[in-house]
Image (cartoon, rainbow, N blue to C red; front, side, top):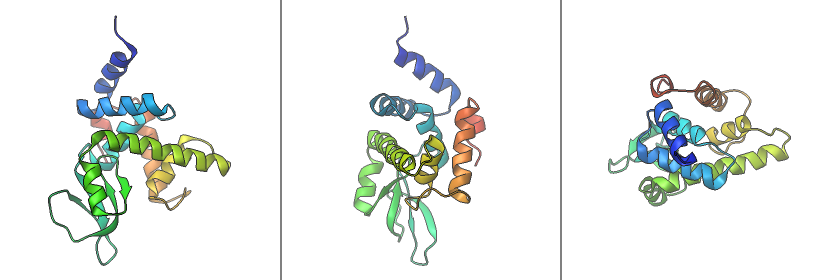
Length: 171
């Protein structure tokens, strides 16, 4: 007889193109936090980094955002957005620590979504869509239009459509 964990793992591995380690961490974060699904976290990791845990974003001196990988020198300034789920880190040192710990990436993303869910509830806009917009906005709040809104719509479509890896990988 299959356990609920194994059944969930089989479904997620069939519906996504996520590596096994990412599926395990997403399920673990879902079980711990409860308010965010493993599918939601995997959709965000696919959208943010295509499951590359050593990716980070930062700002160049001219203010443009640039993506790089840990180990490749890039003259960037913070804040940095690190790992497969693009968690915010104030220093490059913290960013490197995040990129080395897949569990921290998924648990951090789930906890951060929880903070946004609480914020959205206090503003009278409960729901995961509001929280995803806040997460995507990089701490600038929940916007109604723009990049964060488009990001939330894409994540919602990926999760709601029974997304398979091939369909979810388009940007």
